[in-house]
Amino acid sequence: MYDVEEIRAQFPILSRRIGKAPLVYLDNGASAQKPQVVIDAITRGYAEEYSNVHRGLHTLSTISTERYEGTRDVVRKFLNAASQEEIILNTGTTEGINMVAYGWAMPRMEPGDEIVLSIMEHHANIVPWHFLRERQGVVIKWVDVDANGDLDPQAVIDAIGPKTKLVAVTHMSNVLGTVVDVKAICAGAREKGVPVLVDGSQAAVHQPVDVADIGCDFYAITGHKLYGPSGAGAIYVRRERMEEMRPFMGGGDMIDQVTREAVTYNVAPMKFEAGTPSIVSTIGMGVALDWMMDLGMETIAAHERRLRDHAIERFKGLNWLNIQGQSESKGAIFSLTLEGGAHAHDISTVLDKKGIAVRAGTHCAMPLMQHMGLGATCRASFGLYNTEEEVDRLVEALELCHELFA
Ligand code: PLP
Image 1: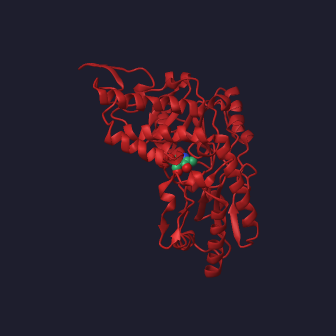
Image 2: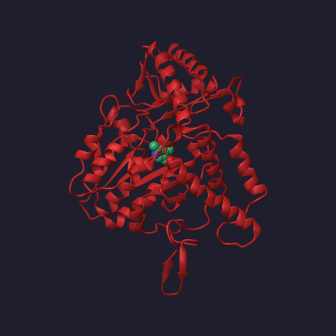
Image 3: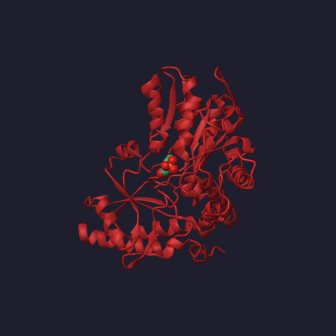
């Protein structure tokens, strides 16, 4: 049985109050809170075990290196990659996607070559491709979502033409909560010989991910949404793509030999990890992923499905509330607007007075907001520690907003 109270007790911040109200944290889509095991790992990492990694032969460096490298295998297991050599540790999804843009796409794209994106992408999976458009004439082909916020995998596959070099899609929308059938997209793209990058920043938090089953070439995750520290993340890169990729940043640790005349590189994946990494944050991310896997990703997904269903049921009674995105495959992320046009910032300020943390704005997804004709929304995004009572508190606070702003 999923004991949500026992889980909540492991997150010290969840017992604090905001003003007089107990905190209801519904901004998990932006960043999640951290369990005590992660906080302890960070404290231990600095208080007892800290040193740089890979370079020293002394005891502390050996411990730090073991813990840091241990995370690589935890990520491998979390994503079900075949080998740890397919896992590059980094600072998060933004770095992961930029690495693919600079290291893999840039050297192999000519003016007029295409990248297929969905309209639902986060700016982290748009702006690096705009760089390629601006700097070397790459063409971005957009695939829209339908009125429910669904992305038809066949529409993505149909958008792949002879000049397409890459498909880059999110596994789960950070605005609408739509879960995309990336497996179908990968199967269709593979038939056309085109690699697929999947932005797993949101999906990996809420459901089991199996890159072998999905069949993608790149899968990016970000530690701070996965109940780990900020400043740590990882990207799975299929072995063949890794061999094609050029290092994105140069510096210490990623080299084999450096002379006045030349440089030779370390083996992959280390040759993509230049400089001193986010040592303790990466170790903390490994602890967070292990902790999630101990809970069970399927178990977490089932809890969040219950929260989603309860929220949908409660929202149904509110005929002045619009839920953006009605996909059948929606996760527990709700972008909300009120009839009458109350501004999302005003709504979130009222919710904050009731202790409820949500995100208001365009959610780093301006093309999607433009496509939907929306200025801003209030986003309530649920996590593994949220409860049905918290859904009810959100509903009560929204009712108050309706009274105030109608
Ligand atoms: N992609 C999606 C879908 C996201 O929701 C986010 C974060 O909000 C990112 C990418 C960027 O992640 P980060 O800022 O951790 O690099």
